[in-house]
Image (cartoon, rainbow, N blue to C red; front, side, top):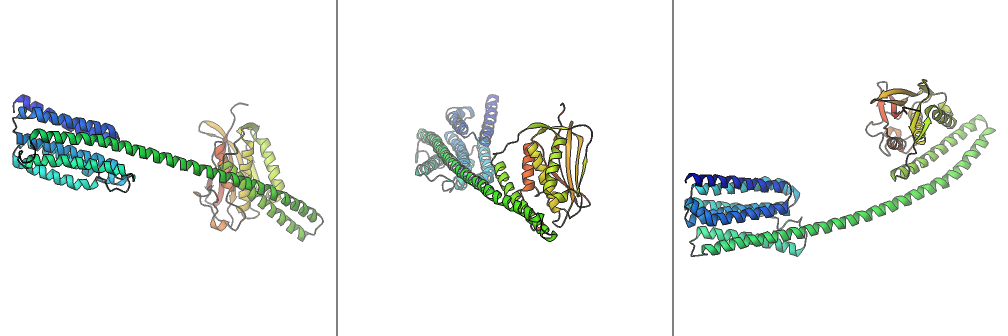
Length: 467
C-alpha cells in the first residue's frame, strides 16, 4: 500500500468503528427507527464502496473482494439480528443476552479487518464458515417463537419473511465465495440479490415496527379503559360504603343518646353499686360512638371529602376548650393529667383548630386507654426554635400499661394494634387518623420511647410571626 491507500484504509477502519459505536448508542437510547435507517445507510455505503472502489485501491482480485463483501454482509446481518432480538424478545432475555450479540458483532468486524491484511482464500473461507456458524447459533434468540409476541398472524408472517430474506442473503454470499462463480451466480447478480434482500428486509422491519406500535397502542388504550372502569367501580363502591356508614352513624347515635340519657337519669337516685354499672354503660356507649365516628372520619379523609379550614386563633383559648371538653367526658382524667405550658405571652397559630382539637383528643384518649390506672399523663406545650422559625411543640407522655410497647414502625398504620392491646376497645384508627390530619396541616406526629418505658407522642406547629 502507498501512503494514500494506508490513510484511506485507516480512515475506513475509524469510520467503521464509529458506525458501530453509533448504532450501539442508538440501541441503548431505544432509537430503533434511527438505528434501522443508519444501519441500512452504512450497509449500502459499504456495499457501493467495496464494489466500485476497494478493488482498485488495494489491488484485490475478484474472489478476495467478494469474500470481503460476504464478511461485511454477515456482520450487518448479525447486527440486524441483534436489533431484532432487542425488539422481539422479552425484557429479561434482552438484558441477559445483549453482551453476547455485542461480542458477536465485534468478532465479525475483527474478522473482516483481518481479511484485509490476510487476503488468502483459505482465511476468507474459514472466516465465512465461522461467521455462518455463529449466525446459526445466535438465530435461536431471534424471537420468532417468543410467547411475549402479539398473536396476530401478519406479525408472525413479517417475522418469518425478515428471517428468510436475511438467510437468503447469507446463502447467496456464502455460495459466492465458497463455490466458483459460474456454478451459482455471476457477480452482478449476487450483488443485486444481496442488495434487494436487504432493501426489502429494511422495509419489512419498518412495517413490523409499525404493526408492533399499533398493537402496543391498542393494548395501552384497552388497559386504560379497563383501569378507568375499575376506578369508576371502586369509586362507586366507596361512595356506597360512605353513605352506609353515614346512615349507620345516624341510626345508631340517636338510640345511643337515648340510652345514655336514661342511664344518667337512673343513676341519679341509684345506690353506689348501680352507679358503677351506669358509669360502665356510659363508657361502653362512648366507645361505640367513638368507633363509628372514627370509621366515618377515616373514610372521609381517605376520599378527600374533608379539607382543612385554616384560620388564625389564640392557642390558649383553644386549649381551654379542649381541656373542658375532655375532662367533662373523662372525669378520671382531671386528677391524672399534669399540664406544663409556656406562660410567656399569647401564642397565635394559623392552622385548622378543629384538626388540632381532634389530634389532641385522640392522643389524650390513647394515653388514657393504654396507661396504668392512676398514673400521671403529661401534657407539655412550649415554644422552641426549629429550622429558623418559632414553633409550638406539643408533647403527650404516659407510662406504658399492660398493652405493652407499640411497634414504632407500625404504630401510625391503619388498623394497627399490638397483640397485647387487642383486648382493649378500639379499631386501630385513632393514631392513623391523627397522623393523616397532621399531614394535612403540614406537620407530623412522632413517637418516642424513653428508657423508663414511657411513651411520648409529639408534634410541632409554626407560630405566627406577626399578630
